[in-house]
Length: 245
Ligand SMILES: Nc1ncnc2c1ncn2[C@@H]1O[C@H](COP(=O)(O)OP(=O)(O)O)[C@@H](O)[C@H]1O
Ligand SMILES: [Mg+2]
Image 1 (cartoon, protein in one colour):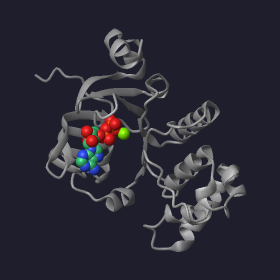
Image 2 (cartoon, rainbow, N blue to C red):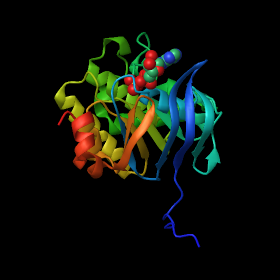
Image 3 (spheres, helix red, strand yellow):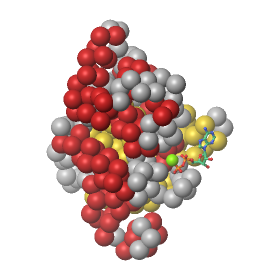
Protein backbone atom coordinates (compact mmCIF):
# COMPACT_ATOMS: atom_id res chain seq x y z
CA UNK A 1 0.00 0.00 0.00
CA UNK A 2 1.26 3.44 -0.89
CA UNK A 3 1.14 5.57 2.26
CA UNK A 4 2.65 8.74 0.82
CA UNK A 5 0.17 11.58 0.61
CA UNK A 6 -0.96 12.48 -2.87
CA UNK A 7 0.23 16.00 -3.67
CA UNK A 8 -2.46 18.45 -4.69
CA UNK A 9 -0.71 19.12 -8.00
CA UNK A 10 2.33 17.85 -9.83
CA UNK A 11 5.37 20.07 -9.46
CA UNK A 12 5.59 22.81 -12.08
CA UNK A 13 9.37 22.73 -12.02
CA UNK A 14 11.44 19.86 -10.71
CA UNK A 15 15.06 18.84 -10.65
CA UNK A 16 15.68 15.16 -9.92
CA UNK A 17 19.21 14.05 -9.04
CA UNK A 18 20.68 16.82 -11.13
CA UNK A 19 24.45 17.00 -11.41
CA UNK A 20 25.59 19.94 -13.51
CA UNK A 21 28.45 22.30 -14.25
CA UNK A 22 30.55 23.52 -17.13
CA UNK A 23 32.65 21.41 -19.51
CA UNK A 24 34.43 18.97 -17.21
CA UNK A 25 33.78 20.94 -14.00
CA UNK A 26 30.96 19.65 -11.80
CA UNK A 27 29.41 22.38 -9.63
CA UNK A 28 26.11 21.01 -8.28
CA UNK A 29 25.53 17.43 -7.16
CA UNK A 30 22.38 15.28 -6.91
CA UNK A 31 20.06 18.26 -6.60
CA UNK A 32 16.39 17.48 -5.93
CA UNK A 33 13.98 20.40 -5.79
CA UNK A 34 10.33 20.92 -6.61
CA UNK A 35 8.46 24.16 -7.18
CA UNK A 36 4.67 24.22 -7.54
CA UNK A 37 2.72 26.43 -9.87
CA UNK A 38 2.04 29.87 -8.41
CA UNK A 39 4.73 29.66 -5.76
CA UNK A 40 7.62 31.93 -4.94
CA UNK A 41 10.64 29.73 -4.28
CA UNK A 42 13.89 31.11 -2.94
CA UNK A 43 17.33 29.58 -3.15
CA UNK A 44 19.89 30.77 -0.62
CA UNK A 45 23.45 29.74 0.21
CA UNK A 46 27.00 31.04 0.46
CA UNK A 47 28.87 32.67 -2.40
CA UNK A 48 30.22 30.10 -4.81
CA UNK A 49 27.88 27.35 -3.60
CA UNK A 50 26.38 26.96 -7.08
CA UNK A 51 23.14 28.97 -6.90
CA UNK A 52 23.64 30.64 -10.27
CA UNK A 53 24.76 27.34 -11.77
CA UNK A 54 21.58 25.66 -10.53
CA UNK A 55 19.49 28.29 -12.33
CA UNK A 56 21.64 28.01 -15.42
CA UNK A 57 21.15 24.25 -15.43
CA UNK A 58 17.37 24.79 -15.56
CA UNK A 59 17.55 27.31 -18.38
CA UNK A 60 20.26 25.68 -20.51
CA UNK A 61 23.25 27.92 -19.80
CA UNK A 62 25.05 25.14 -17.87
CA UNK A 63 25.65 21.50 -18.75
CA UNK A 64 23.44 18.91 -17.05
CA UNK A 65 25.56 15.76 -16.66
CA UNK A 66 23.05 13.59 -14.82
CA UNK A 67 19.45 13.77 -13.73
CA UNK A 68 16.32 15.37 -15.11
CA UNK A 69 14.80 18.84 -15.26
CA UNK A 70 11.03 18.87 -15.75
CA UNK A 71 8.99 21.98 -16.49
CA UNK A 72 5.23 22.06 -16.86
CA UNK A 73 5.06 18.29 -17.36
CA UNK A 74 7.81 18.13 -19.99
CA UNK A 75 11.39 16.91 -19.77
CA UNK A 76 13.46 20.03 -20.57
CA UNK A 77 16.85 18.69 -19.48
CA UNK A 78 18.78 19.40 -22.66
CA UNK A 79 17.00 22.53 -23.82
CA UNK A 80 18.85 25.60 -25.06
CA UNK A 81 18.23 29.03 -23.49
CA UNK A 82 16.26 30.04 -26.57
CA UNK A 83 14.02 26.98 -26.28
CA UNK A 84 13.56 27.69 -22.57
CA UNK A 85 12.45 31.26 -23.31
CA UNK A 86 10.06 30.05 -25.99
CA UNK A 87 8.56 27.49 -23.59
CA UNK A 88 7.53 30.06 -20.96
CA UNK A 89 10.62 30.57 -18.81
CA UNK A 90 12.28 33.92 -18.41
CA UNK A 91 15.58 34.58 -16.66
CA UNK A 92 17.13 37.71 -15.21
CA UNK A 93 20.84 37.04 -14.88
CA UNK A 94 22.88 38.01 -11.83
CA UNK A 95 25.20 40.21 -13.86
CA UNK A 96 23.67 43.13 -15.68
CA UNK A 97 22.57 42.07 -19.11
CA UNK A 98 21.30 45.35 -20.55
CA UNK A 99 22.82 46.47 -23.84
CA UNK A 100 24.43 49.76 -22.75
CA UNK A 101 24.60 51.35 -26.21
CA UNK A 102 20.96 50.64 -27.00
CA UNK A 103 18.07 52.73 -25.76
CA UNK A 104 15.71 51.47 -23.08
CA UNK A 105 13.13 50.79 -25.78
CA UNK A 106 15.56 48.86 -27.99
CA UNK A 107 16.47 46.78 -24.95
CA UNK A 108 12.78 46.08 -24.36
CA UNK A 109 12.36 44.92 -27.96
CA UNK A 110 15.29 42.53 -27.48
CA UNK A 111 13.23 40.87 -24.74
CA UNK A 112 10.94 39.61 -27.49
CA UNK A 113 13.61 38.53 -29.93
CA UNK A 114 12.07 35.07 -30.18
CA UNK A 115 8.77 36.45 -31.50
CA UNK A 116 8.26 36.03 -35.26
CA UNK A 117 6.40 39.30 -35.36
CA UNK A 118 8.20 42.54 -34.32
CA UNK A 119 4.91 44.29 -33.57
CA UNK A 120 4.23 41.88 -30.74
CA UNK A 121 7.29 42.93 -28.72
CA UNK A 122 6.52 46.61 -29.41
CA UNK A 123 2.94 46.21 -28.20
CA UNK A 124 4.08 44.33 -25.12
CA UNK A 125 6.67 47.04 -24.38
CA UNK A 126 3.87 49.66 -24.40
CA UNK A 127 1.87 47.58 -21.90
CA UNK A 128 4.93 47.35 -19.68
CA UNK A 129 5.50 51.14 -19.87
CA UNK A 130 1.97 51.54 -18.49
CA UNK A 131 2.88 49.17 -15.69
CA UNK A 132 6.31 50.75 -15.11
CA UNK A 133 5.81 54.45 -15.99
CA UNK A 134 9.37 55.21 -14.84
CA UNK A 135 10.62 53.16 -17.78
CA UNK A 136 8.24 54.75 -20.26
CA UNK A 137 9.61 58.16 -19.28
CA UNK A 138 13.15 57.13 -20.17
CA UNK A 139 12.40 54.90 -23.17
CA UNK A 140 14.69 56.89 -25.48
CA UNK A 141 17.56 57.11 -23.03
CA UNK A 142 20.70 55.07 -23.63
CA UNK A 143 20.64 52.10 -21.21
CA UNK A 144 24.29 52.67 -20.27
CA UNK A 145 23.32 55.94 -18.57
CA UNK A 146 20.68 54.47 -16.22
CA UNK A 147 21.00 54.35 -12.44
CA UNK A 148 21.27 50.96 -10.75
CA UNK A 149 17.59 50.97 -9.82
CA UNK A 150 16.45 51.95 -13.31
CA UNK A 151 18.66 49.29 -14.86
CA UNK A 152 17.24 46.57 -12.61
CA UNK A 153 13.72 47.67 -13.49
CA UNK A 154 14.61 47.47 -17.19
CA UNK A 155 16.01 43.95 -16.72
CA UNK A 156 12.84 42.91 -14.95
CA UNK A 157 10.49 44.49 -17.48
CA UNK A 158 12.45 43.13 -20.43
CA UNK A 159 12.12 39.62 -18.98
CA UNK A 160 8.34 40.18 -18.87
CA UNK A 161 8.01 40.94 -22.58
CA UNK A 162 7.45 37.21 -23.24
CA UNK A 163 4.80 36.94 -20.47
CA UNK A 164 6.62 34.07 -18.76
CA UNK A 165 4.96 31.35 -16.70
CA UNK A 166 8.17 30.92 -14.73
CA UNK A 167 10.42 33.83 -13.91
CA UNK A 168 13.91 33.15 -12.59
CA UNK A 169 15.65 36.03 -10.86
CA UNK A 170 19.29 35.76 -9.82
CA UNK A 171 20.05 38.19 -6.97
CA UNK A 172 17.61 40.91 -8.00
CA UNK A 173 18.43 43.11 -5.00
CA UNK A 174 22.22 43.02 -5.18
CA UNK A 175 23.89 46.41 -5.39
CA UNK A 176 20.64 48.34 -4.96
CA UNK A 177 19.91 51.04 -2.41
CA UNK A 178 17.39 49.91 0.24
CA UNK A 179 14.47 51.90 -1.25
CA UNK A 180 14.98 50.18 -4.61
CA UNK A 181 15.26 46.77 -2.93
CA UNK A 182 11.78 47.15 -1.44
CA UNK A 183 10.50 48.27 -4.84
CA UNK A 184 11.95 45.20 -6.57
CA UNK A 185 10.45 42.86 -3.97
CA UNK A 186 7.05 44.52 -4.30
CA UNK A 187 7.23 43.98 -8.06
CA UNK A 188 8.12 40.34 -7.54
CA UNK A 189 5.18 39.78 -5.21
CA UNK A 190 2.78 41.61 -7.56
CA UNK A 191 3.95 39.54 -10.49
CA UNK A 192 3.44 36.39 -8.45
CA UNK A 193 -0.07 37.46 -7.46
CA UNK A 194 -0.87 37.76 -11.16
CA UNK A 195 0.03 34.08 -11.57
CA UNK A 196 3.73 33.90 -12.42
CA UNK A 197 5.73 31.24 -10.63
CA UNK A 198 8.99 32.68 -9.32
CA UNK A 199 12.36 31.12 -8.59
CA UNK A 200 14.60 33.57 -6.84
CA UNK A 201 18.24 33.50 -5.75
CA UNK A 202 18.78 36.01 -3.00
CA UNK A 203 21.90 36.96 -1.05
CA UNK A 204 19.66 38.79 1.43
CA UNK A 205 18.43 35.44 2.73
CA UNK A 206 16.01 36.85 5.31
CA UNK A 207 14.32 39.09 2.76
CA UNK A 208 14.17 36.33 0.16
CA UNK A 209 12.76 33.69 2.52
CA UNK A 210 10.24 36.13 3.97
CA UNK A 211 8.46 36.40 0.59
CA UNK A 212 8.94 32.72 -0.32
CA UNK A 213 6.44 29.88 -0.11
CA UNK A 214 9.33 27.46 -0.37
CA UNK A 215 13.04 27.73 0.29
CA UNK A 216 16.17 25.75 -0.47
CA UNK A 217 19.62 26.07 1.05
CA UNK A 218 22.50 25.18 -1.25
CA UNK A 219 26.03 24.73 0.11
CA UNK A 220 29.01 23.23 -1.71
CA UNK A 221 26.76 22.34 -4.61
CA UNK A 222 24.33 20.28 -2.52
CA UNK A 223 20.86 21.00 -1.17
CA UNK A 224 21.24 21.00 2.63
CA UNK A 225 17.78 22.17 3.72
CA UNK A 226 14.34 22.39 2.13
CA UNK A 227 11.20 23.78 3.71
CA UNK A 228 8.65 26.52 3.61
CA UNK A 229 10.13 30.02 3.80
CA UNK A 230 8.91 30.29 7.39
CA UNK A 231 10.35 26.90 8.37
CA UNK A 232 13.78 27.87 7.08
CA UNK A 233 13.63 31.31 8.70
CA UNK A 234 12.83 29.67 12.05
CA UNK A 235 15.25 26.77 11.73
CA UNK A 236 17.98 27.04 14.36
CA UNK A 237 20.68 25.46 12.16
CA UNK A 238 19.76 27.43 9.05
CA UNK A 239 19.74 30.59 11.13
CA UNK A 240 23.14 29.94 12.65
CA UNK A 241 24.84 28.78 9.45
CA UNK A 242 23.21 30.83 6.73
CA UNK A 243 21.25 33.75 8.16
CA UNK A 244 24.00 35.14 10.33
CA UNK A 245 21.79 34.68 13.42
N1 LIG B 1 31.26 29.41 -16.63
C1 LIG B 1 31.88 28.75 -15.66
N2 LIG B 1 32.85 27.85 -15.93
C2 LIG B 1 33.47 27.16 -14.95
N3 LIG B 1 33.20 27.30 -13.64
C3 LIG B 1 32.25 28.17 -13.30
C4 LIG B 1 31.54 28.95 -14.28
N4 LIG B 1 30.64 29.74 -13.63
C5 LIG B 1 30.80 29.47 -12.32
N5 LIG B 1 31.75 28.54 -12.12
C6 LIG B 1 32.18 27.99 -10.81
O1 LIG B 1 31.08 27.35 -10.21
C7 LIG B 1 31.10 27.55 -8.79
C8 LIG B 1 29.74 28.06 -8.35
O2 LIG B 1 29.51 29.34 -8.94
P1 LIG B 1 28.08 30.00 -8.95
O3 LIG B 1 27.09 29.04 -9.48
O4 LIG B 1 28.22 31.29 -9.64
O5 LIG B 1 27.82 30.18 -7.37
P2 LIG B 1 26.86 31.22 -6.59
O6 LIG B 1 25.88 31.74 -7.57
O7 LIG B 1 26.26 30.41 -5.49
O8 LIG B 1 27.76 32.27 -6.05
C9 LIG B 1 32.25 28.51 -8.50
O9 LIG B 1 33.34 27.75 -8.01
C10 LIG B 1 32.56 29.11 -9.84
O10 LIG B 1 33.92 29.42 -9.94
MG1 LIG C 1 25.45 33.61 -8.22
